Amino acid sequence: MATLQINLLQEALEVAFTKKRTHFQTHPNLQPSDRLFWRLNQPLHAVYLAIYSDGYLMLAYIIQRFATHVVIKDGLIECYASGYYNFPVISFSDHYYIRSLITHTGRFCNSVDTYLIYEPADYMLDFLAGLGVNDTFYNFSLFSNCPHQTISLITLDYYALEFFQNNDAILKNSDVASSLKYIYRNRLIPFLAIKNVKQPVTHQAFEFLTYLRIESLHILSTTDDSNKCTVKFDFFYRFRPIMEYLRNFRCDLKIYAETVIIMLNRYNLFTFVSFRQVWIKKSTSQSLEVKLTSLRKKLLELWHAIYGHPAVMVHVNCKSLQTIDETEWRVALDKVCAVMPGFRIVQTAKMITCKAEKSYGMKTLKTEVIFCRGTAPNKLAWKMSQPC
Image (cartoon, rainbow, N blue to C red; front, side, top):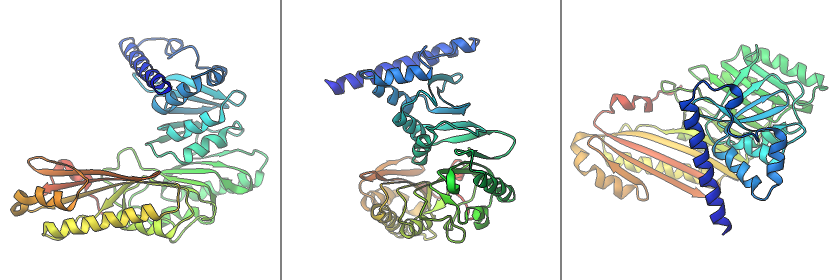
């Protein structure tokens, strides 16, 4: 009965948000005060709902499924849902908040708008704990004059503030276009995200990381990186933070599978690891059997590295684009099915698509391999990339 009730609650929320988005789209000139999902969007309302019978589960589902755009400003965390325009749903303040829901917000948000904050609320560390293990697509926007925004959690730590202001100067001279840092006492960084790394990506772009104390490091990609090159080096081989502090690491840049395998085998102190764009190189062999054997071997090596890593959560998305000679196309499907069991395989006139997901606990490898007949068509050019 409890499961049935939860399912009905989720279905009701799906219907409610769908109707609200439709209403806003058909009435685009509503006043801001009328652009609300409900009248329970104040911090106190969230606390009251959370202590109610099924209110906590309802709020958790809304945060995970709908209210995924987060705005942090003036001691408030506001969760917005997307639609014709974003509309507020849930908010928390430094006086009224639920710590577990704050963590949930950080883990499932897909965009964060931040304003320069000198006295953040006490719950910020809970939000950063969730953001550190965020594996969904997310983007951050900085509303300040400096493209490298520093938010101090301890305003009396003048040494830390001075240190990171100097570090901002280093960032300005680096190949990182923007970054977001939250700092804590003793120069500890609970969360650091960098994005818009200038191409081609080099070791020197990450020189500023040297000897920093970072708990969560996210290297984000740009919105459209279709023409960007693929990283072929270990980020921490030349310039590395103090690895004993680094617990969560996420990389959204394109990176070769060989490099990911090396990093997973080399750094075993992580508790959360995510590589969202891992690529297996195109085989230079003309033989389909050789290509399939090499591809399967590389996927097994990658899975063994994932499975053997001591982290609690390891998420890897892997892709590969291969070509098949015209002379082998007729028998290609049978050979692919024989060598790649467990894959969902679909054949069209000019390509064979193979998809699979392998999991063990909270460790996951998602794979997509496309075999093109002859030369890869132009519409798949974004899948082809050159090493940095």
